[in-house]
Length: 184
Ligand SMILES: Cc1cc2nc3c(=O)[nH]c(=O)nc-3n(C[C@H](O)[C@H](O)[C@H](O)COP(=O)(O)O)c2cc1C
Image (cartoon, rainbow, N blue to C red; front, side, top):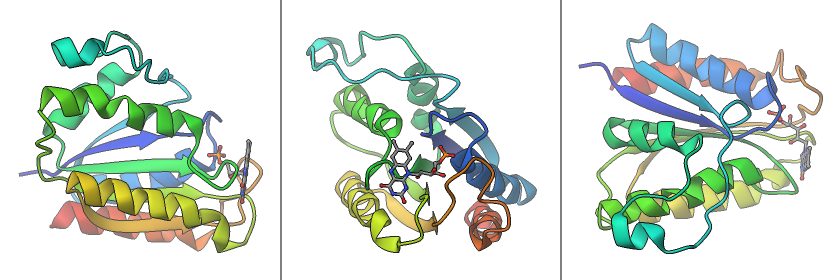
């Protein structure tokens, strides 16, 4: 059966480097037969969690926005891809908002997270890999605590301007990883 992949691209910049990296992964995964849903938070924005307690009562978030597609996609996906630019040494506010909003999903499933696989795609403007450190730590903590299996991280450094990721080896690595995760 085709692997179902939900991709969340957390850059506010349309057609930016994170989107490009995500498309490379998507290409590989689709070529290998996976069914891919890509949610781009620049096009379908997600607001932050209000901590209103609404989901504690109903298991459903009170807000209606781009999260609807993510709530739907996460139900039966086998693998999640988290894409983020590095913003001030960590994940973008856009991706963080979407991940915070998984709170109501966690409530709905009573924190019994089904087994899923996960991939991280990150892009930084500066060449130093240290800028990625907090994102890697956050990703490891998140996947570890939710019981998601890490299938790989693609860290593209030194790509600042829109399009600067072209020619970066990370694009080839992303195609390859997409193919690999779709096959097994
Ligand atoms: C608000 C902001 C903060 C940033 N902070 C960092 C940073 O801490 N380290 C870094 O290497 N690049 C940083 N960058 C550069 C972005 O990571 C880089 O431009 C990236 O390619 C953006 O991805 P996108 O095109 O998908 O939006 C920052 C950019 C912005 C707009």
